[in-house]
Image 1 (cartoon, rainbow, N blue to C red):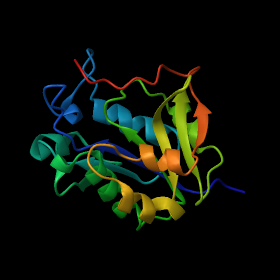
Image 2: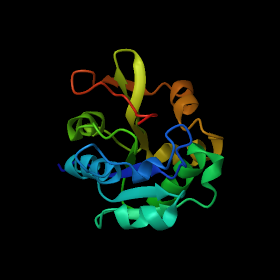
Image 3: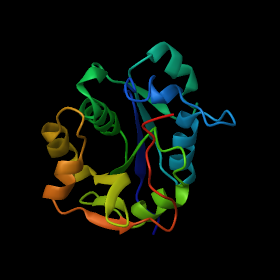
Image 4: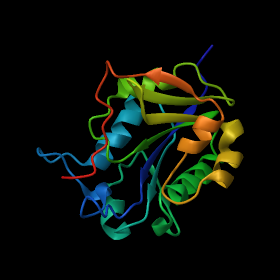
Length: 186
């Protein structure tokens, strides 16, 4: 039986205040776009469709969204990660996906293997979070059954962390695959 469809969502709408510019515009030292790397990790893990929540510096970011991903404008990205998450979940409603794998754009070292590990056996009721040792991180997988409640519960820049904790998300260790670090500074 084929695996159910898992959509991908890159949260990339923020202004990157601590970083000094929107992280969606960032590049690796050898010139690779962090945005393209994020979409590539989701694509290589088999996520379809792939959505990219965009907001800050929209005119500069849109040309960086790979052709196989759908940009999702976030009406007010100053509301933080919660606004990006709500916009992405809303966009995914029209897909056939039973779940969405969520990553942030500031994880350019994320391997597709980590996404594959957390999406290996998901369904519409799934709640899964990658952990690195005991530290929670990305990717996070949210089953379709949770989308409305999660969207209603998130506020500010906290994202899904509290929802995952309150609902006993399955924790899958990915520390053997990479460090799980997001990048807040250059």
